[in-house]
Length: 212
Length: 274
Image (cartoon, rainbow over all chains, first blue to last red; front, side, top):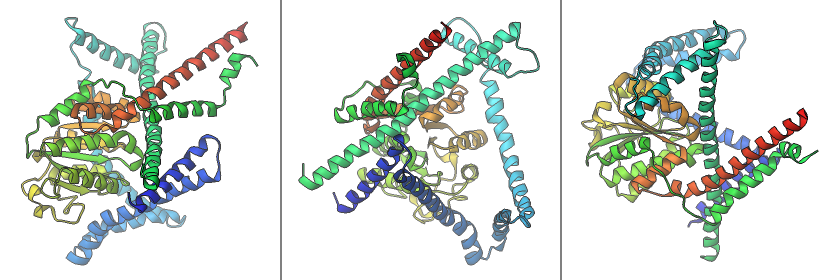
């Protein structure tokens, strides 16, 4: 194991401990690590964006191929920076309007198709009692309908509507519970990975120092 | 203050300490827990298993280093399974802090299987705004990526000569910790009918089951559990499998805390009523 790897891993270990120290209470070590991660991420992103966005999409076409029209979107991009000035902030609306127009035009038909139409289609299921699938289909249909009834506020939630809304909230709660359980799993995975990293660091250092 | 009230007002730092100990014990005394495979993970594994040598799979690595713990084992296991079968890979990294991490993973696995860039795999790297990049790749990979990550023009790479767009790949498997997964569903599956499977973090998993039920994605791996299932099926790596013992211990402790907290809540409410 080379010295560089050990040094970098030791720095990573120190920063992990700094972040974990917040569990006890807020402190300068935590603040240091927090600011470092924000700064490093922003710096890394800025460089990645410059070399993967500005250089191949503006600099190279304009300077090497003379394709000057690539400057137009670049100018629109620069115009968004006028938001920093109260006097000139109105200029940024042109680029935002342009961006919104394109984004909505591209996204709306596909969003409708994928998130609404196909999901509605997936709810139109055959209900039968020949096998377990028929029961699951019924459960999906009931779940969707009762969930929608809960969010239907034009009728008072009384009687049959109230019952359906109550079932709807139960179904929503089951969904939130599943989400919460998966979130706990995700957070514990991150903790487990850091603890595993600490163990690997310990093994690496002891091996480097004593060869054991 | 009686016992139940004290239980209700327990300092959260005690909870952290107990969870911390619960996590450290299995690290110091490793043991294995059985991994039960779910159909939504098995279908992805079987799909990759049935690919023929020379087939091309698109692997999207859409996560940053902070999500490595959960989804990195998935990407690694799929990559190893493909290289072991001589399946070629086109890889992108559309999360802004991910391209360097993805390159590190690709180099490591490619070296292990003696695979060459441009012949056995093509790493496209990163371009800003995943939604537009995914749409553009549906026309031609060369529109957003005229060159690969290393600056080599795609046309000069042997494996990319006859490859234009998603029609030339068997499927896309997106390993994601960002909303890039939504863009793959909406822009790739919606616009180009791309066969798509997802590997996502635990937090995201519940949101993507509706797409599995509707058939918009053919498989779904959720968090570390999904990764461990894939490792168990493919027999490529065991990092996620090892971590499942830690996960299990921590979950037992959290369940006990939830039960204790609820007992404390109901008992103190009962006392207040009395």
